Image (cartoon, rainbow, N blue to C red; front, side, top):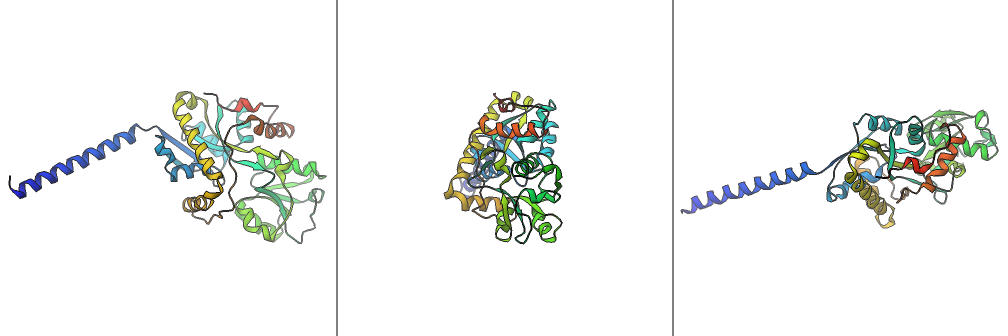
Length: 314
């Protein structure tokens, strides 16, 4: 065979091998179970960590992630089967359970630790507000006027000498709360990280609202519809394992700089490496129950709910 013919034959053979490899890769990807994941702008970060570090792919999952405004909106998306798994707070899922919506938690999310609070009641330094009682008759902002943050605000005010029934609560996005404090349109705000750390030196802390519920809590979690859970038991187990591994990686102090860089890339805003919220590693009902008990006390849910009833047992 002439040299030119041999070269052409080699090129054709190489192209055929390359096409076969591409086709095989596409077939493998097509065979990978798909998981459509929904997060909010303030929660669900472990999904992005797992995606960026290749954890989902290595585990054999084809994961896609989208940001949806609130936990309630994510619940609607899960109910409508436009996403498979989403993140939401404990109160929202308890409220759905009380309305017989078939949701269950499948993996834990963010934790609240009193020793490192990532949510605090703050006022301007010159404010006349120093105690919970001083909030009576005032306007107070939170990220939500219903749900887990309202529960924390009400509980803290009532347990510390104030009367939550005499407080006007307004919903203000986290990025706008400090400006509202400066303008004087609100007297106090229940701020959360990462925004809280950005302005901590410019405000005065009067209390930690979640302390009124518990000093160690699971406040959010990953949930899915019960029919999806029943139809995808292996995918569910794999997803939960990946989220666990991503949470462990995120909780490790040595990874905080890389963690911040990953989130900065996805959210297109600078993330301080020191603003890493802790993640729970197990769905411990004992860390969920105090939230449910407080929610029942404040009539955010119609009656007592056992934490175990909100957790999937595939």
